[in-house]
Image (tube, rainbow, N blue to C red):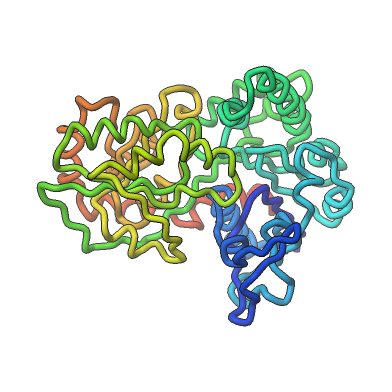
Length: 400
């Protein structure tokens, strides 16, 4: 059986034993261990999909940031078919990690996420006999530019060039590129035409593999809508989102209210602080907007309280090539999603049936009509199509 490692750049959901300690000590400070080690980000959640399915065919190890790793004896391995190992996140983030270099030599296949700088230099220098797969579900050149908005303008260009130089080195070494939706395929074809002098293998069609997130059937049949609509914003607020559109929506329509849940990202403190500075007072003082600070191990209860999820982003390249896990999560629980008309998920099989396209406030009346027209079978078609087996079949056949 081939040995396969998946490098996580972010927190994943690690199953813990009942005897696990309540506290994780990091840099001399105490943290709730479940907050640190079981709260998966969108990238961590996608990585778990990979590990769950690939471990049926490969000997899989997930390399996890030490910031989000519990004691070895606290992990409940009875629930999974793969193992975890920690690595020093600070050593690997935009740096060449000697530890990762040695770890990578133990495996036949490495899967890396290209959404941030963790492991870029190690992947670029990986020996040629090891297959390097890049999970490029978030187009780095676009998203990274938006993330840099939190830095002073005189630093943004410097940081962007540094990041892009490492990204190009990584892509020039890649053997296989994994994308998530069809529009992303177009993005990466254009990227590799520019890189073709260095990485000609990507002129061969077989080097691109599509892996969309599986969408499990966790449908909540109790959802009922009437003349009053309760919407949910589910997940962090990053620089590319358009929260002002949400304020405009609830200010314009008396029968719409919204709750923000999960806006506190476990790691991106600067982004979180910017959110509070810009929006927190307005949220607290708005009669039809509330903030849910609870963390839900099982969000079934949360989703059951709402009629739809809302995801509003700024128009531009980030939105055009995105693949938002929060949209797919909502669909999994049977919630329609109001989102930008330009979001690429509208073009994916069956998803348009439960996505409500939105351009501006003038679309809201038609949005509400479509919400009421969405039927149970629209969700069931999705669940049958986006099974884990279907989503990963092409990748598994390519790697076996």
